[in-house]
Amino acid sequence: MSENFYYDDLGNTVFRSSYYKKRGSCCKSACLHCPYGYTLREKGLTKEVINEKSLKVSKSIFDFHHNKKSEVQSLLDSAFGTKKKEFTQDEFYLLRLKNIPCGILNKANPNEYFLHWEFMDQGIDIGHISMITEILSPQ
Image (tube, rainbow, N blue to C red; front, side, top):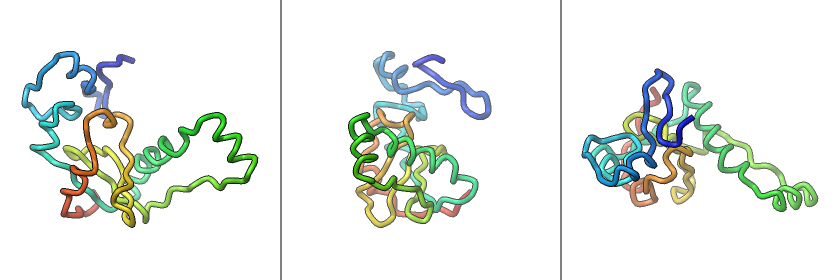
């Protein structure tokens, strides 16, 4: 596996933001992982209700962020009986960029969001998320 690209579910080559950073400038083609903000400005993020089709990717994003505990934290949790937080689809919206799942957003606390690991170094922040006004129907 290359650090510069991956293959999507359709077999297409998708360049990571690390590739574009090494290239050094934006081509203004609205690349999915553009680290220069062009795609975010031009396409924006959308949010949608999580359905059965998007449940797996939404849960994987949640699990990735909630299972990143250090060894010490894991030991403390097991010693003191800290309950593991479970994913429930009713608590979150799915975030998309160019119709690709890129994160989840807490419905009750819009300041709490978790990005898909492929989108974590693209500069997506609460400012971009707060600009989402429309909730799309699940696909």
